[in-house]
Length: 439
Image (spheres, rainbow, N blue to C red):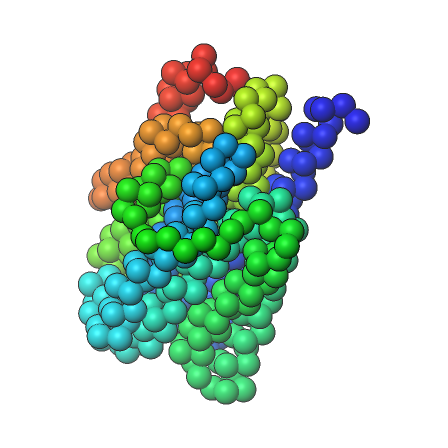
């Protein structure tokens, strides 16, 4: 086979398996939403939607440290073994230290976090137990991300996918068992979600601590300097993950003021469906990342160019498919989560799905674009792109458009923010084109 065909074969293997893995991660949020809707109705979906920003923050920190450390490992594994050998333990250590903050909040005051996020007394009573369990198990979520990223970057994308899908299957099965036969309600859903990453970690460890592994468990003291150094290349992953949480929190505040809990429940349907779409593009980005970093480290610019083109083509294809599918099936998607048959919730959710999802035409490019920049050590460009779509542009649109267009403005905020970010990304690419990116 020619070198180009070999590159395409590797790309297909890594990206296809990572798309499946990332969909698997989002699937247990969907499973939670479905079972909670059956058990608790619209109030349960509202409570879950208020908890999601916290979950996104935990997940984003794990992604930033895990992916950033794994990228540094890939680049430095053949250049500086002493430096690369400490990265795995250091990532585990730092995530544990950070998770102590979440554990403390989970033990002492999870209800106060819910009130801060906009819950009333009824919603806080439903969601407090769920949030407490998620916070206490935060190290498991973070370690799962670290182990998964290192396993994937050490040439084991199949095992990484297996770990993620096994976690998802475990979560879905335990969701049903704990919520219905055991009648544990929201706490049962939280416990199923909290235990599932342990399955993923254990599966990844079959490689990480095997003789085939290039990853060493070298004990070293935690270093703020090293943490910042690794996180620089994980910032786009952080913002990709946290953006859903920031968006959800901002939308919740605005929607509560416009339509109350029914509007938030409708947004819960939209947001949780959107997680699947985001997972597809994160799968493309994270699947391509080990190849991009490897070819960049070897200075193999021709292969680098091939992977970048394939990444952009793949994201374009999925963007079109996702937007068309959701537009056609919006009413069916809503019906799955609307167990009470609330007509107002249906009206809001169907309209929201169709408008909101047009943003993925732009979001696909933004997610994979920031991932490409991170993989080739263009941390500044990745950060600007990620912070625009994840924080600045989305908040600006969320707090302006709804006051002009009402709920239509809420749904338009996401497409508008992604379009603004795409313009910024294209300007960055134009600036970098003569340096390393050949598109």
